Image (cartoon, rainbow, N blue to C red):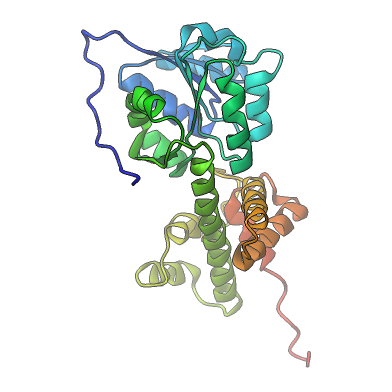
Length: 313
């Protein structure tokens, strides 16, 4: 049975500081780096953006230009890149990690990828003596900054136990879903199904309220006060009300990708997922309208069509 682990204290000043690799210093990765450094870990990071390296060094970390350049210094590497394609490049590209990590190293894959990719990746890394921990997260950039993410991990239990202090540096709820890689990715797929549906539903409700000329701030307050509330309504709703779509925490195109993974997994399982399909089409429509790089709350704009003419039958 999956169990949440209890927090462990940070390394004391008398313990050897552990060097942790971190690939990807975007909105999520920066929160992870900050918490690792606060908990006493040496962080060696890389990112394609030079300004990210400057930021990391200002926080007390070390920066390398490529994943391969940090491999020899780390027995564990946390990856927060966007998807499976970027993960493949991080591991097996010209400057990849896979050929340079020491045997016994753990690759902690926190990206949202398909369960099939996670299952296929594990034996490829095992051939090189590297353990894969398939460990996607939920909680967003806010959770990363606070160190309060939920981590849904699968992979060898011995590897999970070795890197648990690393996970506890940025996760408040940590679950081990079993030895078989892919279970973590499957759990994240189910998580993203609900997240995408909840955002789309919040947009639909608020757009309908707007059509009825109701005061949107009051509508949002009422909806959040009772049984209609959801975490996504509380978080994304204010952005929808204010039409604040340029302050991006998660983009529309992220949910085009993630709900695409949901539909792929559902098809493989011969499982009908009609609400996921509907939400996917709304995010796809938003992306098609040029909103792909806007905050995912911009999906509300797909509902905001001109009202019908009073003369229409």
